[in-house]
Image (cartoon, rainbow, N blue to C red; front, side, top):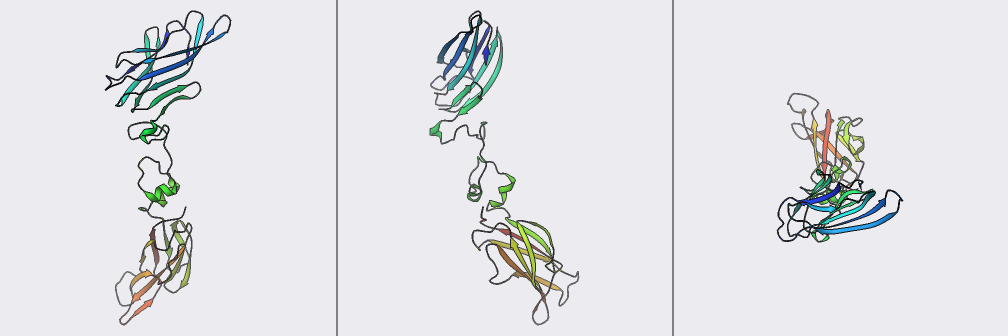
Length: 274
């Protein structure tokens, strides 16, 4: 950020009156003599004056270039303040940034790094962390964050949605003969383990075998009659962290008989490994 003319300057103003304390600012620069190229370090600091414009970095002298190195504005007030910093070219001001600072926040500009907000450590917010009403750095939720399910400031990426305890971790559709996996998510394979039995193998295992499995089927016929009313359940002692088995059977006049349906469906929810 360079001030190259005697009419160039940077100024600052707040959006209104402060509750208790004015914002504090600091600036550092190097003055370069246009004739000799000699560098002279410079520094300035001060306080805002509510909505009244205050000079942040004054104009350079004749035959001098002012190379601004850093700007810092600290909110010493007890309430949020809106800070506006402008570049003024001989009475023609133009906004460079408008930022909302919470108490204890610092707005920083540095050469080659552009603008950033350093959050107040006491607020519990991390460096530059975004909030509902403030721009900033957004963190990606880890599988552990997804399982906890109580963070409202992180971003959820597609590859980690399934780790949330409130969403499906795996699902699928398979043919009734157990030979074809028609569609799925997080399933490696299916197998025909017997008449009316389908084995399902999960890609990313669950932490324990107490996850929930919802299963259903498509009957092989459209009419209801003895031998044509099919039902399904999970096979006893066949649920593991990485696999389970579904059974299909017909209603008959006297008992139940295993029978292959037209298709199997399933949906699983639980605590999945990363």
